Amino acid sequence: MNPIVYITRRATFSAAHRLHSSRLTDVENAQVFGKCNNPAGHGHNYVIEVTLRMPMDPRTGMAMNLVDVKNTIEAQVCAVLDHKHLEHDTPYFKDLPSTAENLSVVCWNLLKAHFPEGSLHEVRVIETENNSAFYRGE
Ligand code: NI
Image (tube, rainbow, N blue to C red; front, side):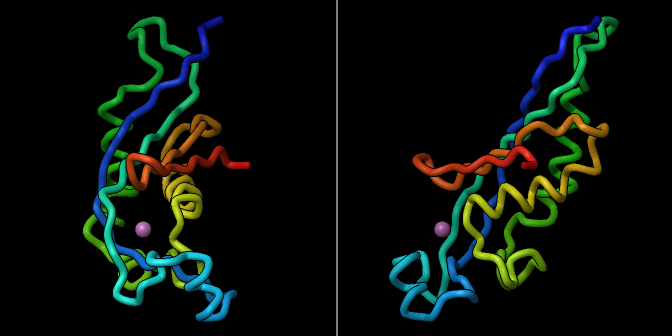
């Protein structure tokens, strides 16, 4: 049987956002999100790490060509989110706070159908050098 391996590809995009929940009052939003709730918003240079779990092809020594992984991330995530305001310019965060947690779920949903079935293992969104979140489809 071919070994099951995990491969990860990293990509970057820059986006603006404002943390705000429609399920909280303005006062609660300010308390929960602090300066990240400032109305004018702010930006991040996001890093996304996409991990696939697949059997290795013994002919190539690869699970999947990383060029294909790179192209898929660029087309499905970077082209959609780069240099956008997450709330104003995309349809995904109209009613969803644009936390790293929700961003990892949104990116998972954008990517899942574009990789071989069952191969997407983890989507990690790194918001700052100190903060990240990952989603595994659970
Ligand atoms: Ni932020």
